[in-house]
Amino acid sequence: MSRVVRGALIQAKLSEPGNSPIAAIKESMIDKHVDMLVQAAEQGAQVVCLQELFYGPYFCCEQDAKWYELTEPVPGGPTTKRFQELAKKHQIVLVLPVYEEDLPGVYYNTAAVIDADGSYLGKFRKMHIPHCAPGFWEKFYFRPGNLGYPVFETRIGKVGVYICYDRHFPEGARCLGLNGAEIVFNPSATVAGLSEYLWSIEQPAHAVANQYFVGAINRPGIEEPWRMGEFYGQSYFCDPRGKMLAVASRDQDEIVLADMDLDLIREVRNTWQFFRDRRPESYGEMIQL
Image 1 (spheres, helix red, strand yellow):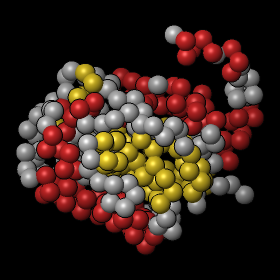
Image 2 (cartoon, rainbow, N blue to C red):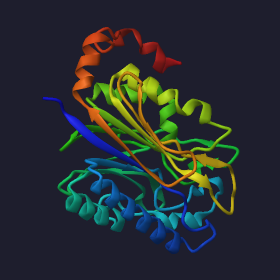
Image 3 (spheres, rainbow, N blue to C red):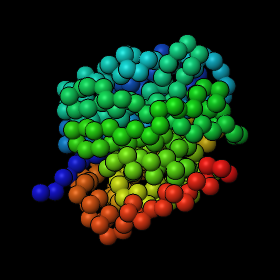
C-alpha cells in the first residue's frame, strides 16, 4: 500500500507596505495566511509549509532595529501557539517560519515544526546567513543556527527543513537525507536577477542526490517601499528523481498542492545506491579547506 501524502506550499504577497506600522503588517499577513491555510486543509493538504518570515516583509533589505519587534519565543510565542491550534483543528502538519527571540538581542531565522495534533515537535534555525549587497543584510538580524539538521517524525512522515540561503550548501542537504528526511521544505525569499536561474536547479539536485521530496517556497511580488527586486514566486514540489510535481505562478498569491508517494523513496534508493556508495572516510579534507 502506497504512502501518499498531500503537501501544500503557501506563497503570498505582502499585504501592507513595509512602511506601515509593524503590528498592522504582522496582523494582516497572519490573517492572510490563516485564510490560505484553511483553504489548503479544505483541499486535502496533510502537511503545509509557509514562506520565510511569513508574517512580515523581507525587511533584511535595510538595517533597522525596529524590525526586532517581530521576534517571538519559539515555542511559546503567540504565533506558534495560534498555529498549533490551527494545526490541531485541521489535522495538518505545519512548517511555520518565525523570527525567533532566544534571549534579548539574540535572534534566529527559525522554522517551528508542528504535528497534526497541534504538538510542537521542535525547530530548525537557519544555518547559513548571507550579508551582501544589494539588500541582503541578514547578519544584522540573525545569529547563525546552532541546532544542526534535525529531522522530525510527524504523522505524515519524516520532515526536514532548510531555509532560503541554506539551499546553496549541499552539505546540510545531505545531512538531512542521512538523518532520515522524506520531505525537505525550504521556505525562501529571493529575487529575480540574482538567484532565479538556480531556483529550478539546486533543489531538484538536492532531491536527486539525497533521494527525498522537496517543497520549495518563494514569496511573490515587489515589496514597497524598498523595491529591491521582484520576488518571483514559482514555489514547487519535486520528487526524488528531480521531477517537478507542481509549480506556482510567478506573481500571485497561491497554494501549491502535490501528492507525494513516499514509497518512491525506497524505489529510487534501491536503483541509485548513493548512500551505500558514499565514502565519508575520504571527505575529511572538506573541513580542512
